[in-house]
Length: 209
Figure 1 (cartoon, rainbow, N blue to C red):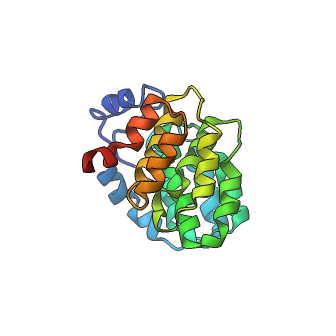
Figure 2 (tube, one colour; figure 1 turned 90 degrees about the horizontal axis):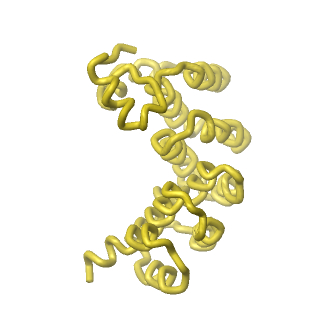
């Protein structure tokens, strides 16, 4: 992949200098990876590529790995998704975690009967990034929001002292408020949410009032 060395330092700083960057902005990366994503590959080849891309130090390669996994969403089985879930905690930060969530949430939307099983891969895990996926899993699926699963995920982390968890709680509730504002208002009034989570949850509802 071809990057811009002048852009790389700023991109690294944005990610708290946790990762090296080639200096490739998202639109350019999408263009450069297009041939790879459109090339016919076996499932085994895709999995091998994802593994290889995750070993590379530059962050853009992890983005390509996730895009590749999403591109082949319909090819995966639940067992494959379970295998891929290991990457959520590898080189983990909000950017990669939320991108992986797009895969798992997208699969649950495409195959609704799998939502509970996918949720179970992440809910109750000791790693906060896994639980962030559980909380935000249904962001793409509000038309069929499972309020029981969302409640379970949020209640497990109500008092977790993590910005990324509390932000996720607010994010999930804010998204849910688009389709069921009454439920979200009731949830907020009956649960002791952090200031951050409550502010995020009520954003759209406050704007409408």
